[in-house]
Picture 1 (cartoon, helix red, strand yellow):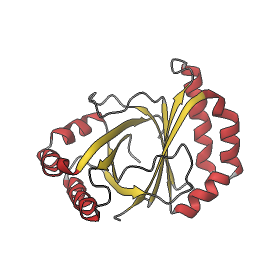
Picture 2 (cartoon, each protein chain N blue to C red):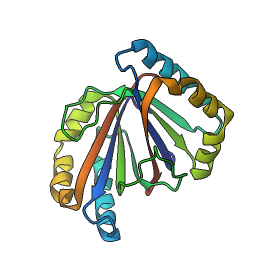
Picture 3 (cartoon, rainbow over the protein chains, first blue to last red):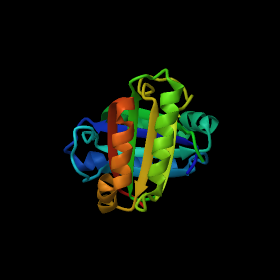
Picture 4 (tube, chains in turn green, orange):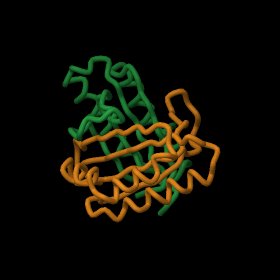
Length: 105
Length: 105
């Protein structure tokens, strides 16, 4: 697993719309083609035990693995990423990002 | 990458204490020994660009990969995980968990 984990959670404007959810997932898939993306996880809330500490209100999540902060910065400014934001941002009402750096190998 | 991503964020009671942070990291490392844990990432906030959507106030994060929800449930009840919670929970003031299930391979 790489040293920089970029984890993004999306809350859709229309969380009940399976079509909107699928559109967003299809959009995220294209991010895989960006050279700096070492690995990708695209997910939805899992059916694990519901506990107070578990956040389950988001609709879709993407987790991208980068070798380092420099690659993440290149990704942010990459035209494929910019096109993703331009094309799909009308679908979401909120985005939350967690960028973490590995402290162990 | 496995199909179930269990991502936990910890806010320390004493976020300025490097000792508390290191203690928690050492505790998390022991979770790797649980058979159901397919992979682990232990991290701290990365020095990526600061944007409104980026959450950087947590102190430590752990991300565990499981094959499926069943393995995650076994992990939750595993004595090594229970001991981790008992021993280290005095260090944190808040925990937030995101469990997501892969929608693509």
